[in-house]
Image 1: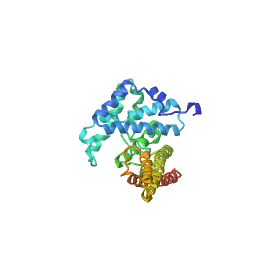
Image 2 (image 1 turned 180 degrees about the vertical axis):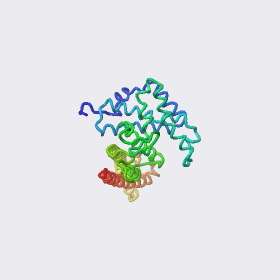
Image 3 (image 1 turned 90 degrees about the horizontal axis):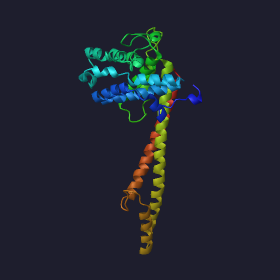
Image 4 (image 1 turned 90 degrees about the vertical axis):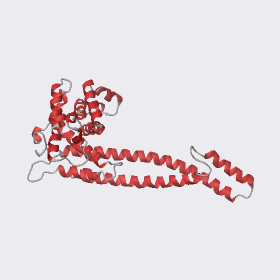
Length: 305
């Protein structure tokens, strides 16, 4: 893909180019009314799918197609009973069999609607595994279209991440380690469950996300440092005020402190605010170090692909 053909998922032009057709939006809204987590999952999988496609150097046309397939991959869950779809604990064997039907239900829904038909592969193939252990057909790599292989990687990643409720990318390598093992052939099979080339692109997406988290924390650190600098100056004034013997000097430094107060700060609490900011800065520094360590771990695992 050339530089001028580069695809940006987040640009307003691109988002309008999807213009998720009325029928597609309707199906997504149905998921939303049924289960807000399923709707959010569909959006996350579409986002990750789009970015994987970009790292695979796919054409803009294919990225739009594959991302739209990802938006619709779980539409069959509309017909899974809510007591199964929203069950907190593990599914029984019979419940799991019912859950698995969402792939064929979604595929049939798409095939019956001319506007959804082009994206039917997302619904049907996103749970197929390269080694033949997936469903609904138990196809192997040669029979699973590339869009199905891409969406499977994005789908599994978001499912694990959502289940573990990560609030940061710290320990995200635990999820990637599971997926790395699933990409390796076992018991004499030619393939593992996941396509290693696609998984490698997911690792790049995760590294991008960790680096973005570091950037956001660094921006907040700059805010903390600026305020700590201001509050440290106020503390100097305060110390001089305490040491002053003349009332005139005491008043001078007190007024200087009051002029530097920010919103929700008072003369009585600014020293506490200073300590809170210092603690917050130390915490962010530790967090960033952990995130850099996480990047190292992800890159180390990526080399195994």
